[in-house]
Amino acid sequence: MRKPPELAVRVGFNGLAQLAPVIVVLGLTPFLLDRLGLDRFGIWSLTLVVLNTLRMLDGGIAASMARFFAMHAARDDRLESGRLLVGALLFLALLGGVLTALAFRLAPWVVGLLEIPDRLEAEGAALLRWAPALATLALMSESAAALLVGNGRFQALAGAMWSSAAAFALAIVVLVQPDASLEALALASAIRYVLLLGSSLALGARHAVFRRRLLPSLASAREVGGYASRMQLSALTGFVNTELDALVIAAFLPVRYVGLYQIGMQVASAVRSLPLYAFAPLLTRLTTLFRREGRDATRAEFERLEHRWLPAVSGYGLVGIAAVGPAVAIWLGDRYTLSGAVAAVLLAGYTVHVVLTGMRTCYVRAVGRPGLETRCSTMWTVLNLVLTIPLVLVAGVIGVVAATAFAGMVASVYFVGLCRRTESLPLILPAARWWWTIVVAVAVTAAGELLLLQTGVGGFPGLALSGIPAVAGWALLAAGMREQLGGRIRPSPSLER
Image (cartoon, rainbow, N blue to C red; front, top):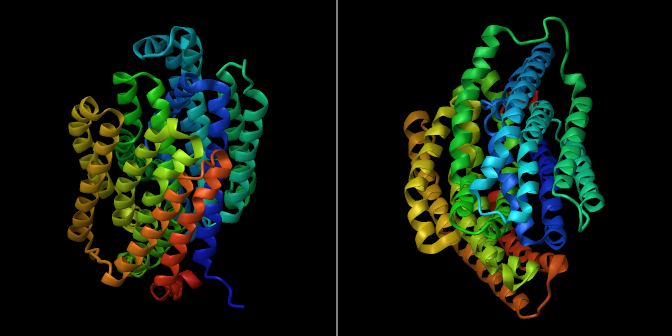
């Protein structure tokens, strides 16, 4: 039997790793809705927005670690990897301490600005006080896990991610009782991040050497800081395009609508995430190639990979859009039809974005030009800001997500043109035969979902059953595109050494 290509194995294990929190979140959502109620679930959803916001205020450090660990791994420079890791963890710990001190003073004031029921204001303030500490633990765990990513240790990453996700699920079931405080959710999250941090450090220990001097040199710090600052700008604009939607909804509508939005956003993000599981292995691959052979070889590798990425992700996303709206209604019931509509609209924007920018994002990060990505996300942000407030007044929650989706599509087209002009990355258009295959797959999926809606099945079993039409659609895609997708992509000779 032929051994699977190394890239496919890495993508598979990275996908397995990233699936862990997605499956746990989706599996626990009905449980949390039952234990918390929609208002308290909305407060927890809003806390997650704040937590994710704070995770983006780290100067771009956590998001940059995998690229620099891969650069050091290409030279087998474990001493510099150790210094980079120590410097990143120390910086994040100091930043987290400052933000936590501020949160303890500001949380009650922030809660007073939101439409939170009086009886729940104290619990909301308590969650917001601890959000910076949780964000710090999350960033530190991501930085440690990046050591595994940069060295291609995706099997170890999967073990660390599943262990931490399982611990989180167990903590939620044990701690979140009907009369428990919302702070129990914060404790469960802390358990998850601490376990991920510890297991990532233990599994990645052989890739880092710790000797005096423990911190990176000033020149190294400047290089990382310059790259990270551009990643920070991309992260901030990315926040405006996603998490700010929840804040706008909280400002204009009752807090329960934040929960309805959050459910739809989580489902759309879960469906979108499957192609994104390839990002870390692809970034490691392109970064290593850029370090060893330069820009021309990296550009040629981009073209080889883009010929696969475009048809596969286009078909996957369109089938997902056909399935996601009915799937939410099947899963949670008719009360959550709005969440299904949110998921479908967001996934439409996400699909265009991932199709057009996915491989280009990996390329520009690998060659050290994340500023191009920042320009794309800035356009998304500006257009989103222009559209969001008018549309929330006209169409409520759907108006907010429609603004996000449309702005993302426009920005993605801009990014394609920008990369073509500055890096000579070609535009590759899907062949007509791909679209006929996609149309058939979408029709089969939509028909299957509509039939399931008539059966009255629900809950997690209903969610599992709703995946069957989508899997059938994706299987049709795989069969129709097997000639395009089935051949092995030959890596650059330096990647085989």
